[in-house]
Length: 79
Image 1 (cartoon, rainbow, N blue to C red):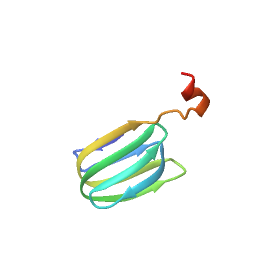
Image 2: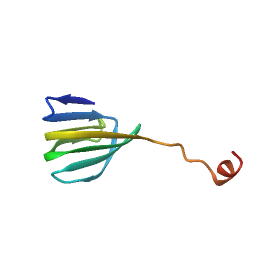
Image 3: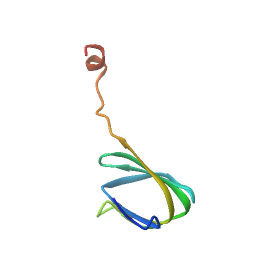
Image 4: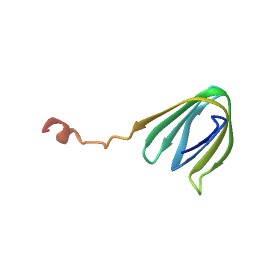
């Protein structure tokens, strides 16, 4: 993650865009979910080959959630 003056952000390891508009961008990355909130957000570039995204606008917040491993029902019952 590289943020420049809260006006642009570049993120690597992007697998997909889960949703977006001018106030948020929700992403799935190799390490979990990432949510960018702000104003006038615009996806300038996304490269599936390089797994990166470049977003401009006023960035107000950045949230990360860690990807949890999926456990089978048996593993959850016998913890």
